Length: 157
Image (cartoon, rainbow, N blue to C red; front, side, top):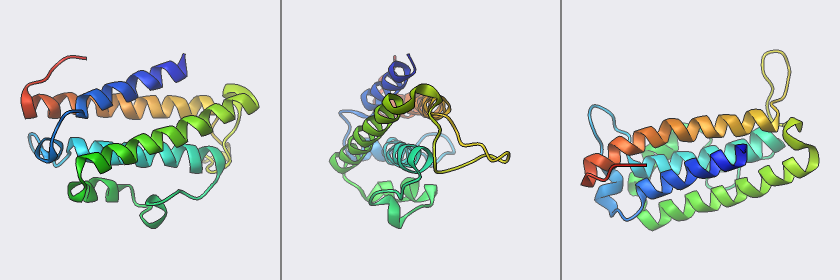
């Protein structure tokens, strides 16, 4: 069920960002500098961070290995073509899916990550990592709703 909820959030984000040109992916609304392109790049980085670092204690793959600051994805996305943003996001999702499913096969939802610990020294479980990813997507899909509507009026789930 957790994997299904995560896939629904991923699909909704992709739908909200699809079919737009450079201007559409760079559009902002209200006082925020957030863009749909920035959301794609940020969530690509989050996918890799959770799957590589949180879950497996591994170094992040390029381009994140040279840009560990989560703000870089937001600020650099305006220089990227739409096809590059979607490709980077889809590749990160694919890597993440593989690593998450591998961890599930190894130890189920209680399998512990090896990259981070909380203040009590406990590593997050796969369940916690999946819920964190779902929460991250759900929050940003809400942003994507507002941004997409401001670009071309598209609304809905």
